[in-house]
Image 1 (cartoon, rainbow, N blue to C red):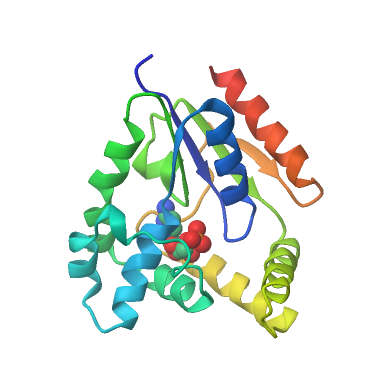
Image 2 (spheres, helix red, strand yellow):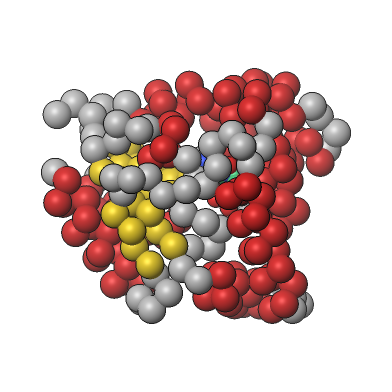
Length: 202
Ligand code: C5P
């Protein structure tokens, strides 16, 4: 087959980023973290730009993971992500990436449901809110941030609420996706489960 698309969706801090990178490496596919698109637009909005214009003007070079990793960019991302014209402006880029020759992994919230409903393999990666907040909190502490667990948990709940509650492309599990709950899995176990699920679809 010329192209093979793996769609990986799930809530914030579920482990889908780590799994997506490992799955892409395993199969030799290119990987797109679609959250970066919304983070870049959110960042522009924080700088005073109109989010729809920012989405229309976005270029691949703007997707620097280092500068877009902040909690502020994440919250701004989930706000601009509720604007239908922002989502529409980012659609073609994602679909073109998905169809690239040699295979692609896209991770986000609506890849299996809206962006690539015909994806050959679909995974839904999830974990309890407490486990997700705990992982994010440990990352922040390890990076030297003085953060309270309760604040991180509140942040996770707020983004869940926004991502699942919006009317345009809300976060939900595609009917034909394989669910991987990473709450009680090590990173290696979660990656192995994801690779096994993709192999079943090949
Ligand atoms: O995955 P990440 O946490 O980087 O995504 C940031 C925000 O971007 C999410 O909370 C969500 O609101 C939005 N997003 C989205 N659709 C995607 C990817 C991300 O709405 N496919």
